[in-house]
Image 1 (cartoon, rainbow, N blue to C red):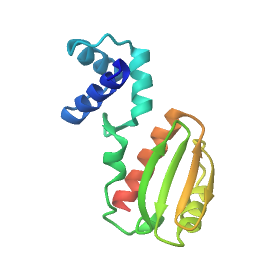
Image 2: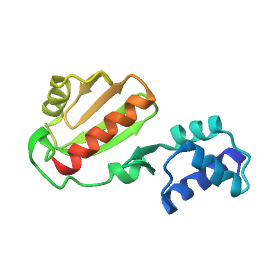
Image 3: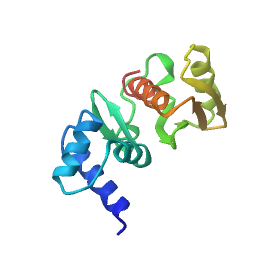
Image 4: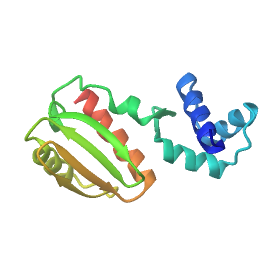
Length: 149
C-alpha cells in the first residue's frame, strides 16, 4: 500500500475512533502513530478523504450524509434523502422523486454567499460552493436541516 493511502487510512481510523477537534491535533496524533506529516499534508488528506468538521470535531462525511431525516418541518426536510460532498466545490443532494426543483428553489431563495448555484434534476441537486471552507459550512447547514427540519 502506498504511503499516502496508508496515511489516509490511519487518519480515517483516528477520527472514527476519537474526537479530533483540529488539524494541529491530527498532526500530533499522526506523528505519535509514526507518520511523518505536516499540517499541509493533513489538510490535503482531510479534503481528499472527505472529513468535515461538525459539532466541533472532524468526522467522515459519509457518517453525516447517511443520517436519515428525523423531522419534517420547514425547508422540506422530508424531501431530502441524502447529502454528500464531492471534491472541494460540489455537494450532491438527493431528494424524493420529483422534489429536487422544490428543494433547489428553497436553497436559492435564501441569500447565502457560500452557494454559487444549483442544478436540479428529478431527484438530484448539484450544489456548487465557492470554496472548500464554504462546502463545510453549507454541509453543516444542510445536515442540520436534513436532520432536524
